[in-house]
Length: 262
Length: 262
Image (cartoon, rainbow over all chains, first blue to last red; front, side):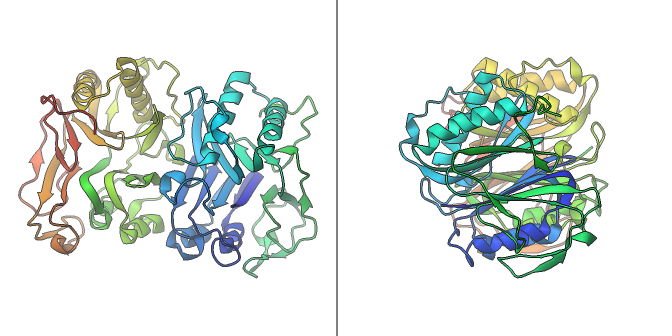
């Protein structure tokens, strides 16, 4: 399996501290040594980084910890390969462009007989993982459904997730650069931070940080991960079968008619 | 304008030396300070790197010089912004997926009234540069023509290039991961290396390298750039209006019936 990290903020947030802790799971605090990747939606666009080295041994992973890229949304992934060999083409996050937006996808899971999910050909995997196949299939579903509001996308992902979780383990994060969606079949937790921020400690690295010095008083952001990243007590577990959407730093009420794309 | 670097090899070649020299043009030996990017087609897949910092000041550019990623094809770009502000979304290389392959594009140029090039909607720019618009338009042409051989693609790019170069300056590189295509409206040169390799000197950094120690005896590779990268005497200028294709490390004879995709 793999490790997932997600972040959604209402204004650009420094990502270095979260990444520096998380990356320990790629070989020190976890067996996820088969490469890593991370995508950043910044105010000025999206870019991502992929490496087949273990994150604890990669100078690129170190640089991302130091560079502290300010992002609105981040999706990080540490891989423990099951389906698909250890290759750059099989390294998350995967992306596809749809209607002028770049969609970014990470997954923790393993799905039996994922090939039964028929692809239209509009979105085609470039590698050989189950995860990228599923991503292309999800993009097909979104394309066909012509969803363009957060509630609709979230509900569609919940329905797809229910089908996929019957095929195995399926925890995922997906973003179009405005909203961060997640589905939990087994394990995922989240935490929203807002002022007063205080000092927090990474459970992976032991590093402390005074968030007060790194956030504006009106910053609101949510972190998601396979298991809690920090010593804060208010990490909440998602329930199996739950889909959530995060916009502007916090959980969206997808039942609200206001849950439309910004 | 911008600076371009391209490489095509018959087997993976270390890219560090070429990159370390080239990146000096992004702020020391040239005014191209508005970000940079580089895409690598490796045996195990494609990945790329983008930064809005000048390459001479970016720790990411330094890392790419040290990391020495072994690649079959490389496309590097140092930007001097004209159309489109200095943002990650406007930083080359741009990529699009078509028929299960990732296509990667860099351009040096400036085109008047590029908006007259109508896009079908199949390939949509994510940023605001003339170059990405032109790239999407070229992808539309390739899609519609259903070219799947090197000669056909090269001839189509030559015809498109002739039209585009009447709108301004248009030097470009494009790859599908197997072949590196280039069109020259004004300035581009190239050099093929094969054994015996000898020692070469970067014109940008003054660094020497004994290529013999870094290449196998059967390695063949071609470098392309806006102006010569090294002191070697056999850099050849492309002629305005010329399109070329490079496969397996050397120039393809596109008039040959054997010029089909591997």
